[in-house]
Length: 241
Image (cartoon, rainbow, N blue to C red; front, side, top):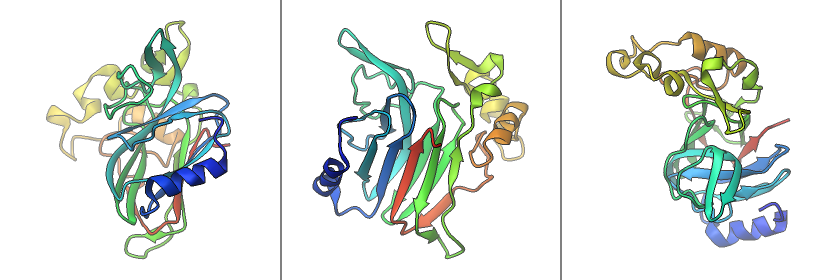
């Protein structure tokens, strides 16, 4: 995808779904290649995104799921895998399974021109990201649609017990406390599933201090999950400067 031009992308947009009211603009500002993925699939046949790549993607009119970026991907003979965000398909196309954690998740619920969106660290963090609606207003007409993001370097605060490393022992991401420690208290399951029992913890608070606009534990509602109506597009930037 690194060789795509903006003209090609606009043609792709026209060919694959000009009827859609929702356009996502995926921009890779990272210094390295990423591979986009989604569950359920959004039908991106060319998920590879080199540094500086911009992809305009016409989303389905009805879609609810997660989008993320896979990192450090390569073929081992004929099997495709990634150090973070891998979906276990063995191919460059994820085919809708959930990712291998840790991964920064972008969660959306699209109902034609109304889109709910959040940045979630509930399953860890593998790279910085920002969602910025272009125009539109919050449902109910109570203001503009806000930016949400997590753009800081989480590796600086990731506890040793939550560090994810590759086969060479190099840091590649930070697990959430739920995935790293497997404790119902951090996963908000079992006896901790109620709103009263599911509370911020020492790990989620550390991440929240760094990424105030992201959700850092299962019942985190600060900020709320915004519902945006009739935005022109949604600018999704990986490694925003």
